[in-house]
Length: 632
Image 1 (tube, rainbow, N blue to C red):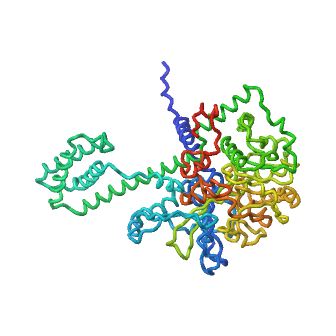
Image 2 (cartoon, rainbow, N blue to C red):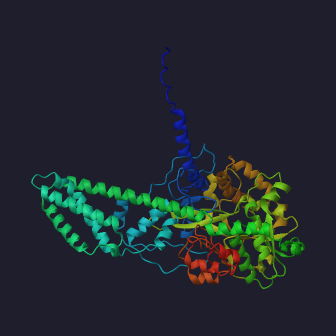
């Protein structure tokens, strides 16, 4: 008889590999979401000192760029206006998956010099000072301030620390904060808090077994009530008797001689647990907020799908054929819009047309990606905008087929960088937040795509035009290439470590996208696109999307640094996607509105006071909008 072989040992390797794959699959969506927002940090302390560029594990909430923080000392007094003392910094919440802009690491320290966010205990001590006005920002005219609202100093300090860690979520939270109305539920929780602190000490005292049992019973009854009721209206009718009973029991417990150290230790334990729980919920809420502002709403996705399907089902409504001859006429007024959002592009066109006196010679060129191309085509074939013509261009197809030498084939929207502006010499002053919008990589190919045109006006898709912009074609830019509104809250000298050894004027101001006048002839004459490609090879060391987006800031500022023609600051009012403090009359009287920031007007999270100006130009009585529940 042959001996029975021993049973084979189970291999644990495959099971561990499967568990590892499942765990990694859960991390992929989070990593993909936050890799979109690379972090940048620059400190400008003194001219002779090097600038540190540390790694910030923070959650950037800008549409496509990063958060920048610049701190500037107020030594000379020449540039000490609050608006001109910037602290730039890209990011808000703790996330480990950020990419950082590449710099000369031989001169850059990786050790951050920024102090950590203040702890709650420090905030409570500092908050006992004089109340501070609510944080607000100036507009370009310097007179758009709402009357200052005075909050509790504790709330103001906490909101500042919260905003540094969680970004614009805290602004939205304060705007929608509700006053607690359920006082009885709150009192039950307070009683439960105190009873839990005294119970461990009472249970150890001999001869107090009855009091210990009574205290434990009251704790269990309170927990049972609170598990079933979260508002006063849900509480049982006999709740007042339970509250009085608990008060008497707590009073008897306080009258006993107990070890104060035990009670203090228990109080601290419960407090720390509560703080940890609150911090967890804030991080969770900030994540969901970030997901909400960077994810296409379900109704908008439905609209795009319905339009795409209908485009292939129905007979082509190619209005482009009848207007094709107008697309290449240099004397016409040509607007260029880069967008992946049908409704956003529609509002920009509708507002521009309604604000124009003459529209016979107005042409709009919409650069979109392959995914949204057919939805755009069908939408603008169904809808007309007075006598203007709309030309929808598949950007990715054009680059791939006609310009294969260009490596950047993906459509990039304007890049936004959140800017925290403060002053090192006056640290008690409020830190204000601005968004710096610059050209993306796709903007540099516009002259190659529209070869027959001489001048265009580039509009971001988060713009609303309220005045006739025809005067922009009559501006003599004196040989400059790009007419833009300058943002002197940030100067290139403050980014010297970020920009490398390139030649530039340290006193040059940054500039904003939104409304830009591009002289295509001068652009080609100065070889701006070729300079862009050279800088792209220099600054983008990785092929990932995050590296490409962070490189856009340096490339936009350097390639156009000496070619900017400053437009009148009153041309546009920016900040409608993050700043609650802009007065209504300033918004109403501005020539154009720029909703730069997280809270875009097509989102439910948009600022309600400003959304109405965007909704005014939204197409009404559209079949597909009704079917997809797109709320006007």
